[in-house]
Image 1 (spheres, rainbow, N blue to C red):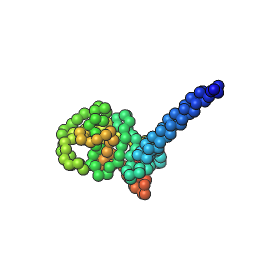
Image 2 (cartoon, helix red, strand yellow; image 1 turned 45 degrees about the vertical axis):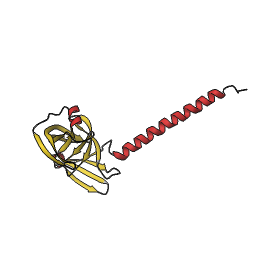
Image 3 (tube, rainbow, N blue to C red; image 1 turned 180 degrees about the horizontal axis):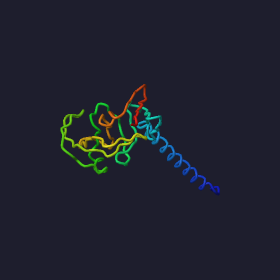
Image 4 (tube, helix red, strand yellow; image 1 turned 45 degrees about the horizontal axis):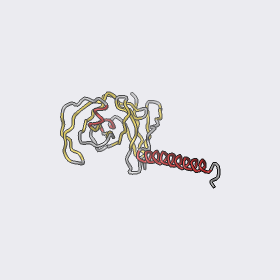
Length: 171
């Protein structure tokens, strides 16, 4: 004969396991996201005449950080080897960026055609840049923006170990 409440105890045990699996999945998903982008919440430091942002490198040694283009959230990967800010075509459409003059690009994957555009604003932490030259790149995968020298040349930057310090001097 079955004991009263035994079925309810079994159901509670199953629910507890489901809840534990859900919480573990959430925790490890967030942990993995932090490993790829340790700069999801970019902190800024203000000094007399400057703003500084300190970024941590991810597990691959890249500097990835959340920011904004024209007030819309994006994810940047800093790329000092890129002449301009490079935006995947799909993301450029979501940001309503205009395609300008066509231009031939040399990328790691070979030559391709891209399109000039301008960014009214680009933000990383409290650093704000205006009227930044950029490219819409049809063959660029994903939704990560390559933050190239057309933006970075407006900043001072220093890398030490796994940390990159960006400084905007205010005029």
